[in-house]
Image 1 (cartoon, rainbow over the protein chains, first blue to last red):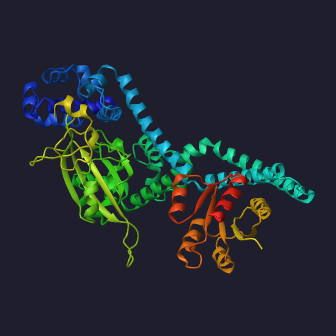
Image 2: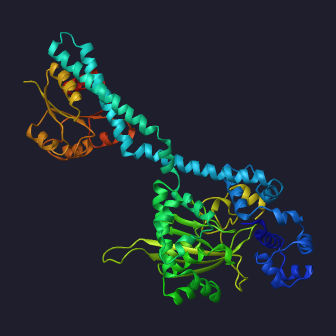
Image 3: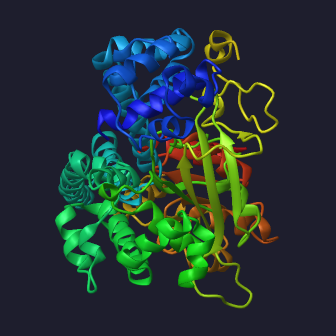
Amino acid sequence: MPTQRLVGSRIREKRLDRGLRQAAVAETVGISPSYLNLIEHNRRRIGGKLLADLARVLGVDTSLLIDGADREMLDEMRSAAAVSGGQAEVDRTEELAARYPGWSRLIATQARRIEMLDEKLRVLTDRLAYDPQLAGSLHEVISAVSAIRSSASILVGTEELDQDWQRRFHENIHKDSVRLAASSEALITYLEAPQTLVEQAGTPFEQVESYLAKTGFHLAQLESDQPDVARVVNEAGFTGAAAQHFQTIAERYAGDAALLPLGPFEKACRRTGYHPALLAQEFGVPLATVMRRLAHLPRDKDHPPIGLAICDASGALTYAKPVPGFSLPRSGGACPLWPLFGALSRPLQPLRLDAVLPAPNSTRVLCYAVAEPQGLAEFDFVPPLQSTMIVFPDPPEAEKAPRPIGVSCRICPRIDCASRREPAFMGIIGKTGL
Amino acid sequence: MGKRVLLIEDEPNIIEAISFILSRDGWTVHTHEDGTTAMDKVLGLPPDMIILDVMLPGRSGFDILRDLRASPVTKDIPVMMLTARGQEKDRELALRLGANHFMTKPFSNAEVRDYVRSLMEA
């Protein structure tokens, strides 16, 4: 996302950090509150004197508003600090990001890489323990070695062994040595295929989502009347598990696009204010289909940013589209207060939640979630559930106070939260004073 | 005729080597290579002791051991498990299911012979 798109978000963050009301700030700089609201939601470009005035009112340098780090990177840096165990000055994360953007990107990138390597390590460890091919190869090697050892021991340690027995055991040793050579070679070939291992050890979800992020989560080729899914999948160039996953995603995308053609859907979105329930009623499709479609609108047509998360009945994320201000940890440990998870205990009941993330970002998010059974209904069979949630960051202010929510317990300063499952990294609470 | 040992193992050259050393030690060695029909073989003999491999075609040595200990006819037959898997959890499982001894491959002939002797002398 271009830097300009984030300036408004930074202005909003700074204003909320300082506890200033939108109307008061607008009046001070001589604009209307509604115009400031548009600026804060990145709907109006800003620069020159107005930007300088806002920076002065907010008590920050203009460059911090223009070049400041995006919230996702700040969250990643705070997560990295949490994982590292408490030595980092978490309360100065934003300052670090503003003063040393290159180093900050490096911290965030390396934290992501460490997480990815941890995942690979876990998968490789699982393979060593449970891979039937590896277990079979090792069994073959050890069996051949055992037979050779026993036969050789008889030849060496048995007195008066007649020639027939000697010949038999020599032959056995020869056969087993040939078998050992072949099985050893097969084992080495198998172990020397790191690419295969890495490919399977990687996270297909992340590979696919990384690819989709480059397209803005919009696959224009699948929007036509007769989309060529196979071609799109082929051009993406995935292999292994990622290819299978992308195939599923692309087929689902094409299916959603067929039910909700882009042109009429975009018009309806604008008319209904992107309201998922109204859209579902208008088109007569399930809520989850509308939610997925909303999150995959083209980014160049001035639609609001909409995040998406899909999880299975265990709460494991199977699809995630982050947007500034919203991302969930993939490797588990997400805040359980998101309606994505709450919906799993109330299938087919749509949930709506106006929520606010912890300081320092204090991002407000409007979430819609629903859990729906998958597949065809059958008697005496409980269908698997899938929960879908869309997130609108920075919605218009609601009358009721938003519900406090978090990203992950480890970086959440809400110490009294009844849903807390693990302690927060001490620095998160101690240094933010929250 | 010496005492009977039943070797349930699917590696032909291991069968031949163990059969050779135990035969020279005075045992009558019977062999069987298939896990599925192993219990029939045991009940048909029955042997004085059993050397039982874990990874067998058709049925695991652990499952066979479980059946051996459940049958009044075979519950007291001494069993020595042989396995290429030396993990502690496998050893614990074998002993919990009632194995008298657990030996990992590659084993030494002397170890096998000495243990079988000790079992019969006990």
